Image (cartoon, rainbow, N blue to C red):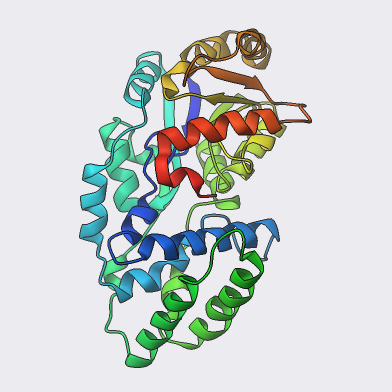
Length: 330
């Protein structure tokens, strides 16, 4: 009998944040991305209607166009991208052990397909964000260019999270009032990143295709784009794993692992087919007693746990080590 597992891509399988790296291709793009990423967190936390975590990938489109970033740039970054420590080993073992392996990622399809191919994950088992960037790259009017450059100048004076109130007010005005009044605003409306509820919908489509309820699934995520998927599987009685996760993902997970190697999950995943949550809980709690060592093997059973501040700190340390600059993003 097959077992079913679904990974988020950026974090669990590759340490790179592709959108962040794309924005670094032009001057001050990293700082602009950090402000927009924080704005994404703020919109998610206020539960803005019709907004999902990860819609950052739509919000940055006008700036990619302004600076002539292309689909070829995405492909080049994907070719250079590294894998998370132990990812290739773990995926190979899972496939050898008759698991069906899936990936649901907020990232653009040009990147997601390249990385999952490196890991021999079938393309039809991957859900990601369609992104015909080159189609959007019509000539900008002088007015639109001026509007975007002014927005960039404003964002470069903002420091998240210190300036959260200002970020919210300024970007609300830009993204929901000024930009929609331009032809370029149509680009944002066409890009629908696979984050938040859209990740849950993608998982349910895979589950329905194979007639496997969420209680039978293992999912692995690490950030605000994953929390609803983790929550859905945890509430269904499946296994939701937070790997080097942040404070947005950990509270919704069944268990957590902070480690430089995702292959440290092998023993847990060996136990899942034999005894489901009960078997996993026994292993995780045993490992938790002995704590991790150095930068590996910090397991925590999170289901039903109230105080996770100490867990957040451990994950924050390892997350920063593994994901470097991308680790500070929501």
